[in-house]
Image (cartoon, rainbow, N blue to C red; front, side, top):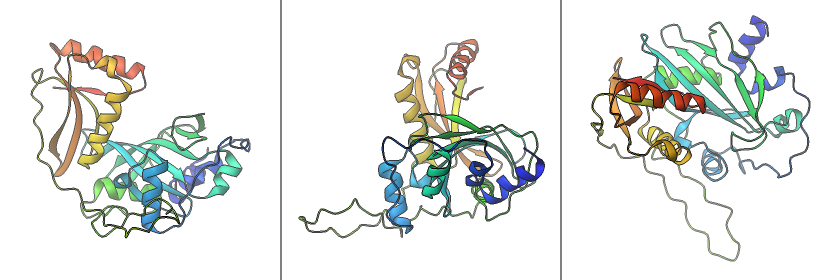
Length: 287
């Protein structure tokens, strides 16, 4: 892919990469994919909750082509930098019919100071679970690019770097749509989804000062959800260990870290992290 193509991906958003990928038209889905019944925000939020692994609180951009969500964030340790995991669900059925792709994921390195991103390997999936029938759509990039502020990747930068960024599906004023009503039953009035109440940060003390960080997010519900998913997927690795979320201030921003603690030694933590990496789980040892 040329630098010109790379910039187009960053400027037009993740859905543009599907048109650039050298993928043959997909075979017909064995199960019809769902789409929101309208582009109204309550309908999009209800669809995400019922049919996708993306939480409405994770969404940073909604375009005619796709919903883009930041599902995990880890500070890089550099000034104003993050490693983020981005998941997207197609909103345009033409993406499914042309490329056989319903969703895709991509790791992104964000440089807040330069307002730039460097894209990792983009992986597409035939279903809404962001797991099944994975195929590589485009390889990782070596250079940073500067997406336009209004593009999905621009929204990723603003969500991680700007304190005043407002996520489109978060807030007490959003009324979540319910499932399609049964005509035989009286309809219920929709209720407002209240903004999550702040929770006090928990101090992780088990196992001393050594822990393994598997994810981080500016959103406490996101961090808890990521940790819960990990506990469900890897229960065999957690015997005798503690999994919890700890909150820290990094470069003036609040970060909620998903941590595994309870290791007898630093070497045990390193060995644990290596096992996670072998399963495809990013991690690093925090002392």
